[in-house]
Length: 254
Image (tube, rainbow, N blue to C red):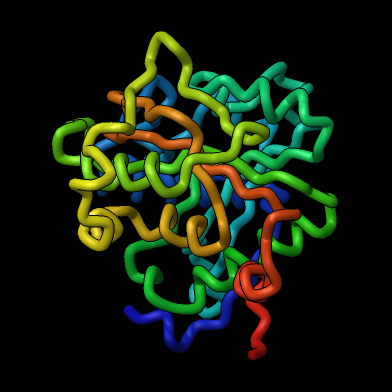
Protein backbone atom coordinates (compact mmCIF):
# COMPACT_ATOMS: atom_id res chain seq x y z
CA UNK A 1 0.00 0.00 0.00
CA UNK A 2 1.22 3.50 -0.80
CA UNK A 3 0.12 6.78 0.72
CA UNK A 4 0.27 8.64 -2.60
CA UNK A 5 -3.46 8.20 -3.20
CA UNK A 6 -5.37 8.47 0.07
CA UNK A 7 -6.88 11.65 1.45
CA UNK A 8 -6.27 12.22 5.14
CA UNK A 9 -8.10 13.89 7.99
CA UNK A 10 -6.54 14.98 11.26
CA UNK A 11 -8.43 15.54 14.50
CA UNK A 12 -8.38 15.01 18.24
CA UNK A 13 -9.90 11.63 19.16
CA UNK A 14 -13.38 12.15 20.60
CA UNK A 15 -14.74 8.63 21.09
CA UNK A 16 -13.61 5.44 22.80
CA UNK A 17 -13.35 3.81 19.38
CA UNK A 18 -11.01 6.52 18.11
CA UNK A 19 -8.85 6.26 21.22
CA UNK A 20 -8.65 2.48 20.85
CA UNK A 21 -7.65 2.90 17.20
CA UNK A 22 -4.79 5.18 18.33
CA UNK A 23 -3.76 2.65 20.99
CA UNK A 24 -3.90 -0.16 18.42
CA UNK A 25 -1.52 1.73 16.12
CA UNK A 26 0.80 2.33 19.05
CA UNK A 27 0.73 -1.41 19.77
CA UNK A 28 1.59 -2.20 16.17
CA UNK A 29 4.56 0.18 16.16
CA UNK A 30 5.92 0.17 19.71
CA UNK A 31 5.20 -3.43 20.69
CA UNK A 32 5.15 -5.53 17.51
CA UNK A 33 7.79 -3.60 15.58
CA UNK A 34 10.06 -2.31 18.33
CA UNK A 35 9.61 -4.98 20.98
CA UNK A 36 8.26 -2.70 23.70
CA UNK A 37 6.18 -3.78 26.66
CA UNK A 38 4.85 -2.51 29.95
CA UNK A 39 2.32 -3.34 32.63
CA UNK A 40 -0.69 -1.94 30.75
CA UNK A 41 0.01 -3.41 27.31
CA UNK A 42 -2.98 -5.57 26.37
CA UNK A 43 -1.73 -8.28 24.01
CA UNK A 44 -5.14 -9.92 23.69
CA UNK A 45 -6.79 -6.69 22.55
CA UNK A 46 -3.69 -5.51 20.67
CA UNK A 47 -3.48 -2.09 22.31
CA UNK A 48 -0.69 -0.13 24.00
CA UNK A 49 -1.93 2.15 26.77
CA UNK A 50 -0.93 3.59 30.13
CA UNK A 51 -2.40 5.46 33.07
CA UNK A 52 -1.77 8.83 31.41
CA UNK A 53 -3.98 8.22 28.37
CA UNK A 54 -7.21 9.59 29.92
CA UNK A 55 -5.55 12.98 30.49
CA UNK A 56 -3.98 13.47 27.06
CA UNK A 57 -5.43 14.74 23.81
CA UNK A 58 -4.85 12.08 21.15
CA UNK A 59 -4.32 13.53 17.67
CA UNK A 60 -5.13 10.99 14.97
CA UNK A 61 -4.55 10.98 11.22
CA UNK A 62 -7.07 8.85 9.32
CA UNK A 63 -6.94 7.51 5.78
CA UNK A 64 -10.36 8.58 4.50
CA UNK A 65 -10.38 5.85 1.86
CA UNK A 66 -10.19 3.00 4.40
CA UNK A 67 -11.10 4.66 7.71
CA UNK A 68 -7.79 3.39 9.13
CA UNK A 69 -5.93 5.47 11.74
CA UNK A 70 -2.41 5.72 10.30
CA UNK A 71 -0.81 8.36 12.51
CA UNK A 72 -1.03 9.46 16.12
CA UNK A 73 0.40 12.08 18.47
CA UNK A 74 -0.28 12.24 22.20
CA UNK A 75 -0.53 15.81 23.56
CA UNK A 76 -0.59 17.10 27.15
CA UNK A 77 -0.88 20.81 27.97
CA UNK A 78 0.35 22.14 31.31
CA UNK A 79 -3.23 22.71 32.52
CA UNK A 80 -4.00 19.04 31.80
CA UNK A 81 -0.80 17.94 33.58
CA UNK A 82 -2.05 19.70 36.71
CA UNK A 83 -5.00 17.29 36.78
CA UNK A 84 -2.79 14.22 36.99
CA UNK A 85 -0.10 15.93 39.06
CA UNK A 86 2.80 15.53 36.63
CA UNK A 87 3.91 15.34 33.03
CA UNK A 88 4.60 11.89 31.60
CA UNK A 89 8.26 12.84 31.01
CA UNK A 90 8.82 13.58 34.70
CA UNK A 91 9.33 9.88 35.34
CA UNK A 92 12.47 10.26 33.24
CA UNK A 93 13.48 13.95 33.36
CA UNK A 94 13.61 16.77 35.87
CA UNK A 95 11.43 19.42 34.20
CA UNK A 96 11.80 22.08 36.89
CA UNK A 97 13.40 24.62 34.56
CA UNK A 98 10.41 24.43 32.21
CA UNK A 99 7.72 24.29 34.87
CA UNK A 100 9.16 27.37 36.59
CA UNK A 101 9.41 29.35 33.35
CA UNK A 102 5.85 30.67 33.46
CA UNK A 103 5.45 29.79 29.77
CA UNK A 104 2.70 27.71 28.13
CA UNK A 105 3.96 24.15 27.81
CA UNK A 106 2.92 21.22 25.64
CA UNK A 107 4.26 17.71 26.11
CA UNK A 108 4.42 15.49 23.02
CA UNK A 109 4.62 11.72 23.04
CA UNK A 110 3.76 8.38 21.45
CA UNK A 111 4.23 9.82 17.95
CA UNK A 112 4.06 7.12 15.30
CA UNK A 113 2.94 6.34 11.77
CA UNK A 114 1.84 3.05 10.29
CA UNK A 115 4.72 1.46 8.36
CA UNK A 116 2.92 1.91 5.02
CA UNK A 117 2.54 5.65 5.52
CA UNK A 118 5.99 6.87 6.55
CA UNK A 119 7.19 8.37 3.30
CA UNK A 120 4.41 10.68 2.24
CA UNK A 121 1.63 13.05 3.16
CA UNK A 122 0.48 11.42 6.38
CA UNK A 123 3.44 12.97 8.22
CA UNK A 124 2.64 16.41 6.81
CA UNK A 125 -0.92 16.13 8.06
CA UNK A 126 0.32 15.12 11.49
CA UNK A 127 2.70 18.10 11.63
CA UNK A 128 0.03 20.49 10.33
CA UNK A 129 -2.42 19.27 12.93
CA UNK A 130 0.19 19.82 15.63
CA UNK A 131 0.94 23.31 14.32
CA UNK A 132 -2.76 24.23 14.43
CA UNK A 133 -3.04 22.87 17.97
CA UNK A 134 -0.02 24.90 19.12
CA UNK A 135 -1.48 28.07 17.62
CA UNK A 136 -4.95 27.47 19.05
CA UNK A 137 -3.65 26.92 22.59
CA UNK A 138 -0.93 29.61 22.41
CA UNK A 139 1.80 27.09 23.24
CA UNK A 140 5.27 28.56 23.77
CA UNK A 141 7.44 25.52 24.51
CA UNK A 142 7.01 21.97 23.20
CA UNK A 143 8.89 19.05 24.70
CA UNK A 144 8.83 15.30 25.06
CA UNK A 145 10.91 12.17 24.99
CA UNK A 146 11.96 10.66 21.68
CA UNK A 147 13.58 7.29 21.33
CA UNK A 148 16.45 5.41 19.80
CA UNK A 149 15.67 1.73 19.31
CA UNK A 150 17.63 -0.49 21.68
CA UNK A 151 19.37 -0.07 25.02
CA UNK A 152 23.00 -0.80 24.08
CA UNK A 153 24.68 2.53 24.76
CA UNK A 154 27.88 1.52 22.97
CA UNK A 155 26.03 1.24 19.66
CA UNK A 156 24.35 4.62 20.21
CA UNK A 157 27.47 6.47 21.35
CA UNK A 158 27.98 8.46 18.14
CA UNK A 159 24.45 9.92 17.71
CA UNK A 160 24.06 10.57 21.45
CA UNK A 161 27.40 12.40 21.52
CA UNK A 162 26.46 14.40 18.43
CA UNK A 163 23.28 15.57 20.16
CA UNK A 164 25.21 16.46 23.32
CA UNK A 165 27.95 18.42 21.55
CA UNK A 166 25.84 20.17 18.91
CA UNK A 167 22.25 20.43 20.13
CA UNK A 168 22.30 20.72 23.92
CA UNK A 169 19.58 23.05 25.17
CA UNK A 170 20.52 26.46 26.58
CA UNK A 171 20.33 26.74 30.39
CA UNK A 172 16.78 28.16 30.43
CA UNK A 173 15.49 25.05 28.61
CA UNK A 174 17.96 22.42 29.80
CA UNK A 175 16.00 19.67 31.46
CA UNK A 176 18.10 16.86 32.90
CA UNK A 177 17.60 13.11 33.15
CA UNK A 178 16.62 12.10 36.66
CA UNK A 179 19.74 11.49 38.74
CA UNK A 180 18.98 7.86 39.54
CA UNK A 181 18.64 7.04 35.82
CA UNK A 182 21.11 9.54 34.32
CA UNK A 183 23.01 8.21 31.30
CA UNK A 184 25.68 10.57 30.01
CA UNK A 185 25.49 11.43 26.32
CA UNK A 186 29.06 12.78 26.28
CA UNK A 187 30.53 9.49 25.07
CA UNK A 188 32.72 10.40 22.10
CA UNK A 189 35.02 13.48 22.18
CA UNK A 190 33.78 16.17 19.83
CA UNK A 191 37.02 16.21 17.81
CA UNK A 192 36.71 12.47 17.18
CA UNK A 193 33.08 12.53 16.10
CA UNK A 194 31.94 12.00 12.51
CA UNK A 195 28.90 14.21 12.60
CA UNK A 196 27.54 13.08 9.22
CA UNK A 197 27.67 9.42 10.24
CA UNK A 198 26.14 10.24 13.61
CA UNK A 199 23.25 12.06 11.94
CA UNK A 200 22.58 9.05 9.68
CA UNK A 201 22.15 6.94 12.83
CA UNK A 202 19.69 9.42 14.36
CA UNK A 203 15.94 8.63 14.09
CA UNK A 204 13.93 10.68 11.60
CA UNK A 205 11.68 12.25 14.25
CA UNK A 206 14.65 13.57 16.21
CA UNK A 207 16.22 14.95 13.02
CA UNK A 208 12.94 16.68 12.17
CA UNK A 209 12.97 18.55 15.49
CA UNK A 210 16.61 19.49 15.05
CA UNK A 211 15.81 20.99 11.64
CA UNK A 212 13.17 23.11 13.33
CA UNK A 213 15.74 24.43 15.78
CA UNK A 214 15.00 21.98 18.58
CA UNK A 215 17.35 21.09 21.42
CA UNK A 216 17.94 18.09 23.66
CA UNK A 217 18.09 17.95 27.42
CA UNK A 218 21.13 16.75 29.30
CA UNK A 219 21.50 13.00 29.67
CA UNK A 220 19.60 10.05 28.25
CA UNK A 221 17.21 7.59 29.90
CA UNK A 222 17.31 3.86 29.22
CA UNK A 223 13.78 2.44 29.04
CA UNK A 224 14.07 -1.33 29.31
CA UNK A 225 10.28 -1.85 29.17
CA UNK A 226 10.11 -0.22 25.76
CA UNK A 227 13.55 -1.40 24.59
CA UNK A 228 14.55 2.21 23.87
CA UNK A 229 17.04 4.86 24.86
CA UNK A 230 15.24 8.16 25.31
CA UNK A 231 16.32 11.76 24.92
CA UNK A 232 14.21 14.79 25.80
CA UNK A 233 13.53 17.16 22.90
CA UNK A 234 12.65 20.81 23.52
CA UNK A 235 11.33 23.29 20.95
CA UNK A 236 10.96 26.97 21.85
CA UNK A 237 8.57 28.63 19.40
CA UNK A 238 10.11 32.07 20.05
CA UNK A 239 13.49 30.81 18.82
CA UNK A 240 12.21 29.65 15.43
CA UNK A 241 13.49 31.74 12.57
CA UNK A 242 11.21 32.56 9.63
CA UNK A 243 12.37 29.65 7.48
CA UNK A 244 11.84 27.25 10.36
CA UNK A 245 8.38 28.69 10.98
CA UNK A 246 7.43 27.91 7.36
CA UNK A 247 8.68 24.34 7.73
CA UNK A 248 6.80 23.93 10.98
CA UNK A 249 3.54 25.25 9.59
CA UNK A 250 4.08 23.44 6.27
CA UNK A 251 3.88 26.72 4.36
CA UNK A 252 5.53 27.09 0.97
CA UNK A 253 7.62 30.09 0.02
CA UNK A 254 11.09 31.27 -0.83
